[in-house]
Each structure stands twice: as structure tokens, then as C-alpha cells.
Amino acid sequence: MRVTIVAESFLPEVNGVSNSVVRTAGELASAGHEVAIIAAGHGPTDVDGVPVDRVPAFQLPAYRSLAVGLPGRAVGAILRRQRPDVVHLAAPVVLGAVAARAAARDGIPAVSVFQTDLAAFASGYRLGVTAPAIWRWLHHVHEGTAITLVPSSVTLWDLRRRGFDRLALWPRGVDTNRFSPAHRDPGLRARLAPDGSLLVGYVGRLAAEKRVHLLEPLTHLDGVKVVVVGSGPAERELRARMPKATFCGFRAGRELSELVASFDVFVHTGAHETFCQAMQEALASGVPVVGPAAGGPLDLVRHGVNGWLYPPDDVEMLVAAVRALVAEDATRARMAAAARPSVAERTWPAVTSRLVEQYRAVVAAAAGVPALGRAA
Image 1 (cartoon, one colour):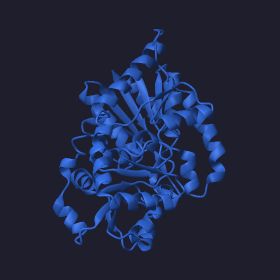
Image 2 (image 1 turned 30 degrees about the horizontal axis):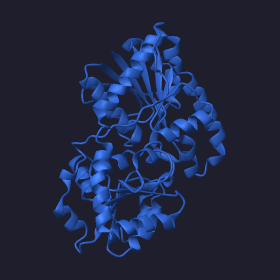
Image 3 (image 1 turned 120 degrees about the vertical axis):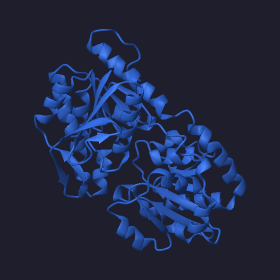
Image 4 (image 1 turned 180 degrees about the vertical axis):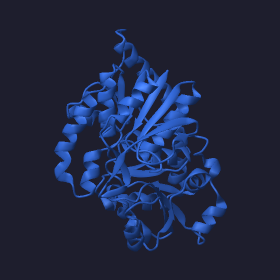
């Protein structure tokens, strides 16, 4: 099958959308499919053998690192040259909307993937007044595709109540070799906490919408060392606000695997995650998690089994959950033992196989062949 993935965000920007596109493209190629990527702005034109066509872009004033594709004829020309069987729109907004129209003109079925709560993202930058317009636009974009794939059951419910239809659940995969308890490093733990404190870690972008400042009370807990992994526009402010925390900056590859596996507790603070891949990677690493009872984490955290959920805006509950896990060795060990099995079946090959099933269904429907079970 020939698949063109149109990425609203892509390398060199590192985020949930770009990471998912890279891994999905690689898995599809490994399975024998012919894959190409269309992305905005400057960056690599080949990722692990998958070609990347670049189109003109501009940067958002409030988020300079994010390239937004400019409307134009380039996408249509690329699709006509590639002649894909299906177009995969990763978090479509501007570039994805252009690609959806171009695909429709050429009779190519398109699958859209809802991955970013853009309205909540805008609110994090004091642009909440734009939320109704954002939702109207997203509804328009996704209605122009054969099916919208969503990463979590909560997101599925939310989109349904907002009037989106033709929805199906498609979660993210996790690399259970790269993220594993086997990567726990006693030497790294000793360097991060020479006094033997337990490591409470966060991994993700350091940006307003992630609410990383909520970790600040944790830096005052006895026997706790807060470790923050990631970079972003809020880094300077967070370093000033949490002088007792250790900031590791952006990490990838083996360094990231060892850091995550070396945590004793993983904490996430974002209240608008449609999935939360970092949390899934922590669980695969055998680390119990504490996360907000909202969005994607509700599909990942089995409260009291592999971690604890807290009301998203209740900082006291967040602190109490972490304090209890730090104090109760037996509870922490029990949750750590349950963490990896809870995501063991969510491998990238498994979720990519589900994606291909959706591709085949929309291609068959476009050809006039009845396909059962297209939407959930």
C-alpha cells in the first residue's frame, strides 16, 4: 500500500506529533508499505529511508519553534506525483486542511488523526477566546476526511459530544525494548541523588500548557529529588521557580531510556493530554505514575494498580499522592510490578497493524466495496 503522511508538525521540532509520525512511518515501511511524508518548513528530507517533501512555512509569533505550512499548490502537486492509496493527516490544522482538499479533488481517501487539543493549547497562551473558532475549524477539517482516529476513549467521547462523527480509537504504541526496567542505572541514580533520595521525574516539553510549575511543591518533600527532562519556552522560568530540582534538558535515545527507568515515580501535570506518550513510556519502564484524571491518562493509569490519578487542578492531592508513594515502599513496589504489564500489548507493530486495517477499510469504501467496522 502507498501511504503519504502529512505532518502538521515534524522534525526538527520534537513533540508528540512528530515523534508519532516518525515511528508510524518507520513501522509502515518495515511492514513493506511504500511511505512518504509531507512536512512544513526546513528540516531533514529523509528519515530512516522514508522521503520527506518540504513545503513553505511560517512561524507562530507565540511559539517560534513551530512551523506552520502555508496554503498553496505544492501539496497537491506532491500528491499527484506520489499517487498514494491513502493520505494520513497527522493532527491536521493548516497543512492538513490543504492536503485534505487536494486528496478529495484527486479522489484519494484521507484518514485524519486527532492528536492535539489545540483549543486548550491556545488557552495556555492566553488565547482562550479563540477556542470556539478553533473547534469550528477542526470540525470542518475532520469532516472532510473518511475517518478520524483518536488516541484515547476520553478524546473519542469529547469529539462525539462536539459533533464529530466517523470516529475510531487508535492509541499510540510504545517501544518495550527501548523503555524497560532493564535500563535502570544505579550509577545514574547516585549522581542525581547522592543522598539516596527517591527520584520523582517528569519528561516532556517545558511549556505553559504542560503546567510543569505544579511540580514545585514536590521539591520541598523530604527524601525526594525532582528531576525534569525536557526543554521549551518555559525552561528559564521553571529553573528559577524550582532551584532544588535537577533539569536535564532534552534527552533522547539511551540517555532518555536510562533516565526514565531510573525514576522511582513518574509525574505528569498536563491537564489536556489526548494521550500522554511519556506516561506510557514510564509504565513500560516499570515506573508507577501519578497523573491528572483527565484525557489520555485515564486510559493508561489504573488507579491504585499501576499508579494514582489526581483531580487536575488539585495540587494538594498531587502532593499527597507522591508523598504516599515515596513513603510506602510496598505500595510503590506493587505498582512498579504492575506498570509494565499494563502496557505490554501496546507495541508499535500492534498499533500499526490496527492503523493499516483502517487504511484498508477507507480504501475499500472509496472503491465502493463494503467495509464493516470502520468506526467505533
